Length: 549
Image (cartoon, rainbow, N blue to C red; front, side, top):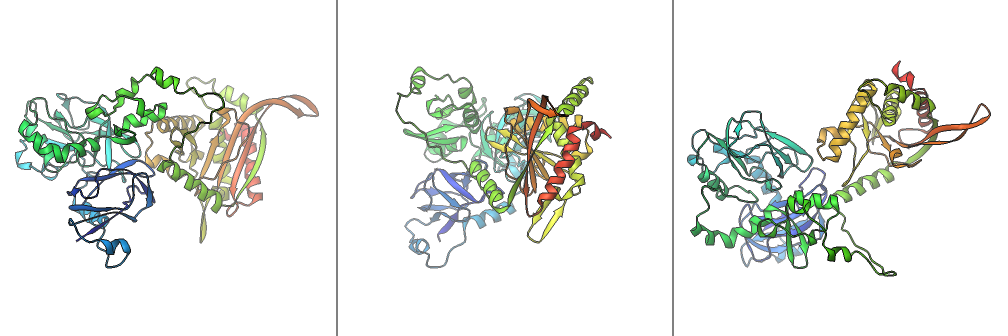
């Protein structure tokens, strides 16, 4: 009976997906666990495996095309089966592949609560596991994690491992996190090298007594159920040659596809590890011009780090005068998600803006004196955050959230701080900012901004803001307005401190001022309320010593 495979929901915020690459074509035989396609979500490009067996009878979304979650993606059934009724919308619709996936996942053990896992649960050939040997699998380190990439190994084969030691840093769909060992022994085998990726529950490493031969364990684990993206047999025992012809036609190509992200090229498919692709994007390197040194020409991290543009590539960048030139860049799912959130905020919340200009003379003197204390350094942004936190306690309506049937006035103050990163914009949160000192706020912002730029923020560090501060003053911007970061009711835009002529006591003198703009949701914050908040804020910023009282 034919099975309808729908576009899966591969992240908690995913509403549509783009087919980056099909790894199977119509007419191919499909086994349970085979990777059907690579799907680009709003967070990452992830592999989508089949939970059914049969023949791929129909593909509903071509490479590069996008469709919503639960829309028709493909149909799997018996070879030669008539599926015209499904395509024309007639006849009864069979159960979708996604519902079977949910049943399958509910029956499988999770690694969230027990990353170490019992060998009997994770290793198909458990009877062949020597005493004291434990198979360590790729853990599920976030609620939406489907696969992980080994960013760094902190242990190598032969090292002693104690319970609680950090084995590796694993890059998930949300952050790079440390993975600690729940076993003691010797690291006998590593299943994934740095930069390589595998799905959750795939073979990651083997720990056991020193000198134990685990080549059979690794081989059995991979051939009997693991979805490790790249197999690397232990040096002491290579895969038997007589097995190579038997495995090559069916398994070799999918394994290479699982090992890396794929990029379409004129000559076919270009294989690149997720880490290498990310570094290339950050450095602006065209992957088409990089020679891969990995298996089957796969581009790895070292290829990007050692890449030097060729003379031909450099010459190609010079365009004759008068010649038009452009490049179309397909919007990533992350960029589309940002666009959707901002559009929703801009057009669902009736924005209005209040602009003010503050005298910064006292703030400059205050910061200079404060930073004269040994081992203490605060920024003007820290002063603004502290001042906002204290002002919000006096104006809870600006610290509110809108719901269709109610307005929530928050008694706690969690301030989001907008941080620009190469992939877009993230907003880590300084919790209970009104209760923290200026040095504590400075340390928290510095720590969160560093994590944001290194992509190590946890989901908890980006949740729960009640108000947002966006500062472009360090870029020389004098004034600007921002879009509200829902569900907040307001966002403060902070400009540069400018030295200019000002009038004081009827005389023109040199002064320092800073312009700020408050964007408010008119459903929760009336104009007078916003103005009163800015008056209170003005008192704190122009006389910052009052924040210490």
